[in-house]
Image (cartoon, rainbow, N blue to C red; front, top):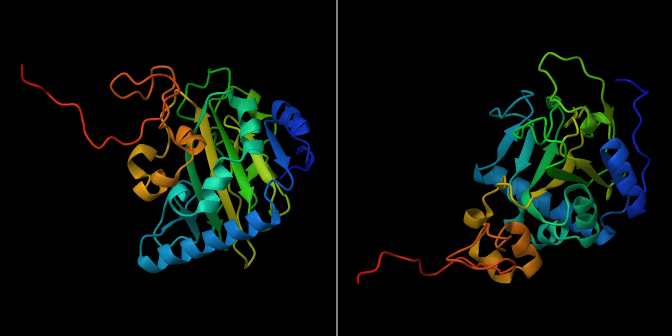
Length: 281
């Protein structure tokens, strides 16, 4: 690891964070979560992860740098939108959405909301770009990720490793390429926001304490989302969802995309109870 790589300094100033996003491809916004939000998100995530493990439906990785392995130490929790009001609140944070829109433009969707609990024994994730499914010659970001630090992120506990400035390189890392990275550290409550082209990956946790993080992954409005929210969002959550959340989940028409039977730009489409059908004369 090379100490000459420079992280942008922690900041509480959204305008400074925007400048960091432009220059470094990432920003570290301190106190992005209030003490109450931090405590609530960490407690709900811990409870959900333990319950999924007990129910036999948990997902684990970290034994291999490239994919899931049975019995691996790190644990993923998928589709947090269904799993707690605090997560839905975080996903619609106005201050954070302003920074995401600085990267992606005004029209965005929530592509997915997940969590990663890095535990002792997990291997570092392969360094990658979050828009590696998009042609590398695309000259602007198509996705933007926010890593919410629910505990202090340190070199030792697997803080996300990044290569500042790599968002401007116009290529993807090669599998055999030796890379120098730096740990994106920060105190609990910090948000790490980064351009989807930035090269990064989960670090290795060599401590005995779990490293909790949740991720809100956003995309431009014309992209297919990572999580199929129209299918996976529970009816109970949809019934209580605000228009802002429904729009982020993809239930709002954008120009002609996402319409149902000709519904117009800006309208919200709930799940239909009845469907169009072939009619007789």
